[in-house]
Image (cartoon, rainbow, N blue to C red; front, side):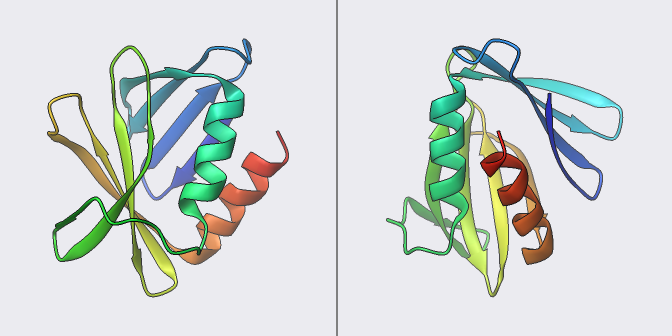
Amino acid sequence: MIQLSVNNYRIEIDITNRNWCKCWLIIDDNSTYLGSESLEYLKEHLLTGLDDDQKKISGHVYGHDFSWVLSLAEVHTTLYIAKNGQDRILLLQDTNGQDICIIELPNDKYLEWQNQITAI
């Protein structure tokens, strides 16, 4: 199980089956199933999607330019990212484009996540 935590948010990725990793969002004690994908897909998209390279902008909301990172199967949750100086802002939306949550990811936490994902 990979646990990517920041403040009261935690994204858990069950890597028991590397071909079909289930992902959850935990906010405080509330758990929401986000969907599934292969570990290879998740690792590739998270590492490239969250890095510092310029991304194609998918939309402008909440005063930021967001770029697509990944979409999960089953529930069809989509993850977008925006840069805010050195920090990142993550936006999770459901299959209807409704916001699930916005997560502020400081650069030090991003580096921690990057190390965790790379080590898989």
